[in-house]
Length: 387
Ligand code: SF4
Image (cartoon, rainbow, N blue to C red; front, side, top):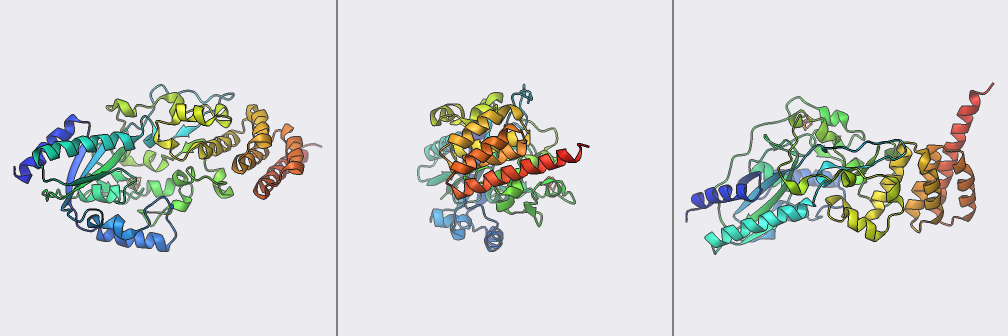
C-alpha cells in the first residue's frame, strides 16, 4: 500500500477512535527548539520535571534510530464545568485546572495511540512505532506545531484553529516515511493578553516560560510555596488556566464530546476542608483517576490550606489548628501556621504561641513566626481605629 493511501486511511480511522486532529511531520531534529531549550537551561527557567538531555528532547532518532516520521494527535477537552457548584462561605472550594478534569488524559491518549499503532501494523507489518504522551522525551507542542496541528502561542500552549489551546497532545514516532503536513501560518500577532495577565510574570519574551515562576508548576511542588506566590495562588489546587482563559483564540470554545473528560464538579472543584485530613486511601479513591493527582496528596493539601487562607475562612480555623498541631509533615504544619496568621482569627494566637514552644522543625518555626507577625500587624491596624 502506498504511504499516501495509508496516511489517508489513518486520518479516517483516527476520527473513529476519538482523535480530533492528526498531522504528520518528518523525524528531523527540532533545531529551533534545541536553541530555545538551551536558553531556558542557561536562564534557569526549567521546572525540573523535564527530560534533562536536550539531544533526546530534540532528536527523534535518539529515541528510534529508524525514525522517518512522526504522527501528532490532539484531543479536545472542556473549558467549563456544567452545573458548577457554588463556592459558599462555609464550604469553600478549590479548583483543578481544566487539563486535569475527567479521566487522566495520559491513559486516554495512550490508549488511542495504541489503537492507531495496531491499525498501522495490520496494514504495514514492517512498521516500527513508539508513542508518547506528555511524559515522553519529545516536546508534544513542537511536534504538533511542525505537523500542522496549530501554532505555539505566547502562552506557550499549542493553539489549534478549531479547539483553541484546549487540547491534549500525543505523538508516535515511526520508521514509515509518511508525507509531511504543512505547519499553520496563524500567529498571536500584536496580542499580548496572556503575558499581561500572568500573575507572576512567568511568561517572558513572548513564548518563553520561566517555569520557576509559573503557578501551574508551583502547584505541583512538594515543599513550602515561596512567600511571594502564596497570595497569588487563589484557590488553585493543581495547575492554572489564566493564560488560556484570557486568550482570544479560546473565546467561547468549550468541548464536551469526549465523555472521559467530562468533569465531576465535586472533584474538579472539591470542598477544601475535607481535604485537610484526607487519608491516602480516600485521596486515591476520590482523585486517583485524574491527572492532577500524580504528585500525591501533599501538594494538593498544602494548596488547599493556602486556598483557605486566601478566602480568610474563619470556619476552618479549628481544623487548621489541629493540622498545625498534629500533622506529621512539616510542610503541612508550617503552611497551616502561616494560614492561621493570614486568616487572622483571634483564636489562632494562643494556638500559634503554644505550638511555638513545642515545635522542633526550623522551617515550621519560621512559618509560626510569620503567622504571629501577621496577627500582630492585624491587631496594630485594628487598634489604630480605637479612640
Ligand atoms: Fe497569543 Fe494573545 Fe492568546 Fe497570548 S492571549 S497566546 S498573545 S493570542
